[in-house]
Length: 150
Image (tube, rainbow, N blue to C red; front, side):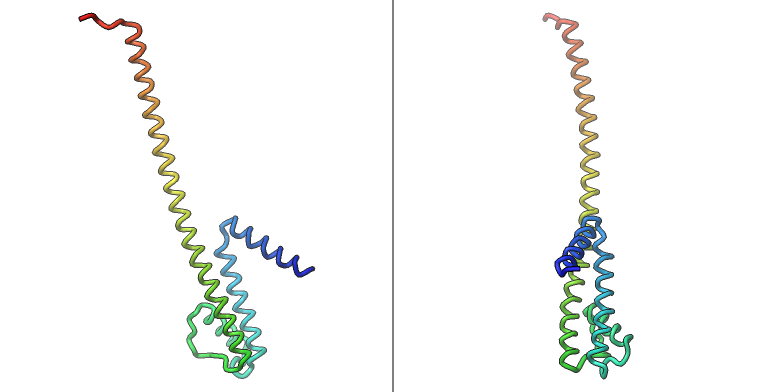
């Protein structure tokens, strides 16, 4: 597989997730995957501060979530580089998740508003049709019976 193929694969899946309104689960899985990957890498790079894979994943998830309890922290230069990347990705993904959820709420409200407007327009159309029928009936009566002379 060429480097461009992976990029287009990721782009296609991202666009499909957006089109199908499945961005939230997609981003959540990506965030979890990033946590596991970062936890694994930091365990390899900084064995002293992250002696187990579980410690690495715990630190990565807490850091991705921008909580940062401080119970486990990287002290080596490479550990801090990885920590910086995890923070940047965490803030970015949290922003995307927040924007996605907000967008879904706004879309749902807009859809309800469109439905209310469509119902209102249908009622208005019925009223106008009844008025037209009444006017036609009045015109028929007036055309059939000439007005009385004063």
